[in-house]
Image 1 (cartoon, each protein chain N blue to C red):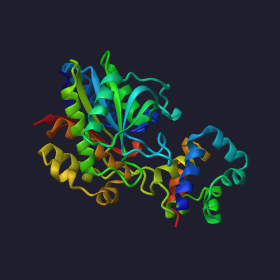
Image 2 (cartoon, helix red, strand yellow; image 1 turned 60 degrees about the vertical axis):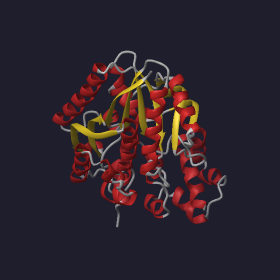
Image 3 (cartoon, rainbow over the protein chains, first blue to last red; image 1 turned 180 degrees about the vertical axis):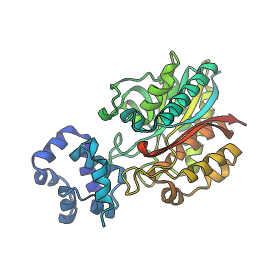
Image 4 (tube, one colour; image 1 turned 60 degrees about the horizontal axis):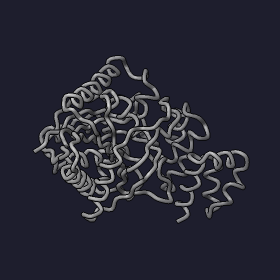
Length: 85
Length: 275
């Protein structure tokens, strides 16, 4: 169930400017607003894209989240992380 | 009475705008020419309103509300993505006809969601910028299906949304000449580990089914099979089925197809033929 809350947190980071700023300023305080597990919290803080995918977080949202953190030019890095063994 | 005079399948790939020079020149020219051909057909058909069937990419709608089928009945602006390189601006809607489509569908039992004001993404803006706005005075009614956040709208339901749109246009008292565009790519993976791959053989099989008029075979494709073979983005074939339903189309005439890894998608263009 809390995977849905993970998606809400990611969506706000991506598409709500104030939330994005809050996450950048203090990720822990921002994530305190969501009922998510310690493991889910770590996946977000670490931008662990493979871990988020394993949690069945929506692919498009994971990519948007990674771009929000790393910019539009980060596709190659994203793919290398996604496909890391 | 208003008339649905044409239907098309066209791409809305955001990278067409964001990375315009990435593919080989011949493919860039083929896509430009195909957009121009569709715009030319809209002009020949004297279209004044285009119903654009698109899908959200988990940006317009948040996890707090994910509509299965959605129509904009008021003010529209976009794109929401600054990285497209297209200036955010108002997009001309046809609010009266949009409201008629909405209320007609609700009366039939269709589960429309709607907005009186909406900022839209590239699936409305790209077709408008690259195609419709070449035809002076054309307005567009944005419709969004849920192709991206499971559980997705079933193929049959997408088709029924189209049928309802078609009936509503036919029952509208105005003299509008309307086209419908099912937008989106063929195979593409968005955010998935396979992102950047294009399954050209899948795309050509899919387009061949439409050219042959085997709509039932397209309708019967399962979401799991399509996702496995052609990626999450290929779910946009539901947008095509909606346009096909509106037209009661029996087949498609292929205008162009390009497999463009630089734009992470197969890029299709086709014109629908009514029964």
